[in-house]
Picture (cartoon, rainbow, N blue to C red):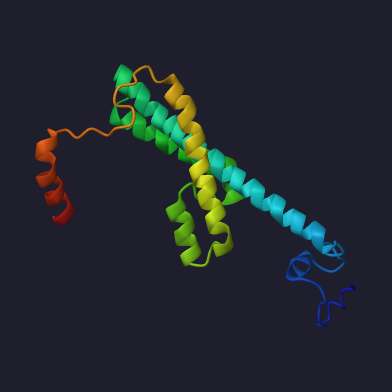
Length: 173
């Protein structure tokens, strides 16, 4: 696969090698299809692992901050918000170059709808987005001192007074 002269001749290799210039500097040139597929699979696995690590860190640190604030009352809303924001910032800088740092299935779907993310990777990305938080929930649950109402979100009002409020909040802007 020789590159034609730089005087305007047609190039006979991929756009990746064309970007590297003549001389076959592409990582794809001359490699068998199975090696190329393995390279793409490894890159996808690395991106999915980065997404899972990012969502793990987000849930572990953010929800951990909520748990600490519930027992000590030392962080407040601002401290919890800062913990979520700092984790997002650290994960974007840490693994953003690997996966794009979506950390949210809605973001992956939005990028796929706007054709900035391949639809073929959306389902795998959703699995990674679900696996990270699920794995983060286990150590948080294990470190929880209280087991009361662990799986329930309790309303601020009595149960018999909640349906009218839910209807009002749902239909009013």
